[in-house]
Amino acid sequence: MARGPAGHIEQLPSGSWRVKVYAGTDPLTGREIRFRKTCKTERAAQIELGKLLQQAAAGRQPDSGVTVAQLLDHYVATVGWDVSTRESNLGYIRRTINPALGSLQVRKVRGPILDTLYARLMRCGNLACTGKPFTEHRHIPDLRPDRIEISSSENPESRTGK
Image (cartoon, rainbow, N blue to C red; front, side):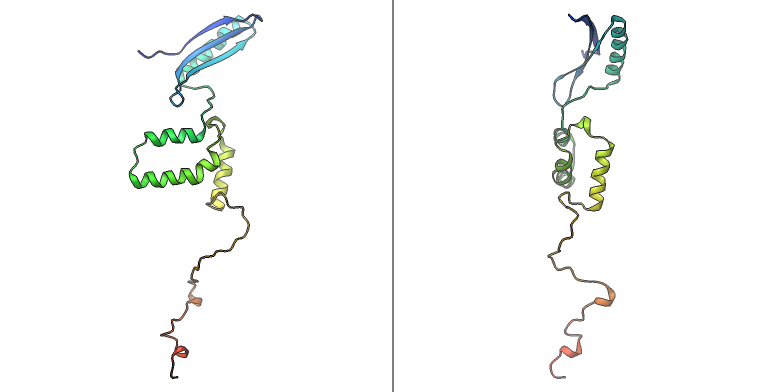
């Protein structure tokens, strides 16, 4: 049977009180989730025990060291994507998300970091882009109506025997 949140209070040699609450196991790392707090008085420790038990019962987890890349690896392994969706999403993860956020701990990913990433992606889809001008080396035809090239068969000057 699954254990619910449980906790206790213990007195430290310094005279302070430590509160510990067990809140289950982390599904990504498999490690136990424990909330800990140190208080000066026993009464404050009892109040803190109630707060930590509430957090554990609500499913809140303490800070974890799991990175965005680890979370995405776990997610990709469990999600049921079709082949084409899987390939395209793995490409987005490999080219865009992992270089920008992969090494960050999930708990540190906040709004300003995502806003910065979105702004860079809107400017240029390539995260390696520095914003400096560059030369496009592929020939892209100019399709403006006033610039359409006339083929040699339609151009009377290009014919032999004028």
